[in-house]
Length: 253
Ligand SMILES: O=C(CO)COP(=O)(O)O
Image (cartoon, rainbow, N blue to C red; front, top):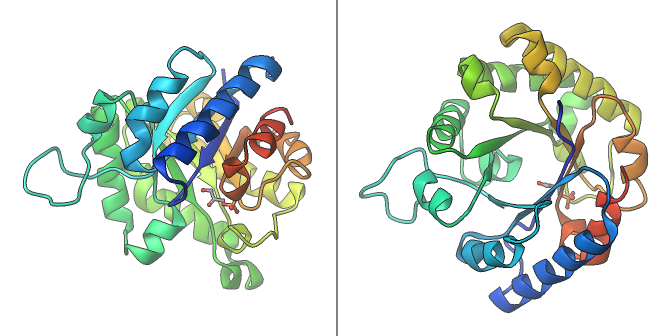
């Protein structure tokens, strides 16, 4: 059964105190208001994972993700954080291949594959991000672009590994711009992604893979986007920093 997921990516925002108060508010609102079967994920910066994780421990709906992970197991890699470390503080999911990491940290397809392997080996579920820049969409090459991203990183996983991953389609032109994809644009790309996955893995596994939409998701547009048959939820940036907006997005299902 395909999971419905709303994940908040906090990126590089909040102090520790602010992070704790944000997650307490979300936790309370989710407990009081969210009756649907939705997996809610919060993704604070590394130093806040343990504290935030403790606060959501008693809430079955709430889960913890990290924003990145090292491809290495352990050792002399200054500044890196391993999958085993994340697992040991209660992290369940990890975002891999966000366009901001591809762009600012030059993460390439091979590295993203290695990060997914390291995550899965240690019991974490990767949320693999893909999505085209504006010039690719304008040139009508967006399907090929996203297809290639999947081929270059995801296709090398085994069937068992693939079962552990979530895909997030985040068109770069929609991230932080206030310009969201239309529900139709999201649906056609999600259907395309699912079809590509069904060629790489078995059809049932592709059918069961959750594919999230990300890019200027807000309480005003989430319901329409989430209503599409291949859209299984959202990866939310800016709006996940406000408990009311984030909860309203969760309630859009
Ligand atoms: O990058 C995103 C989530 O990972 C989307 O960010 P925004 O919701 O701020 O556009």
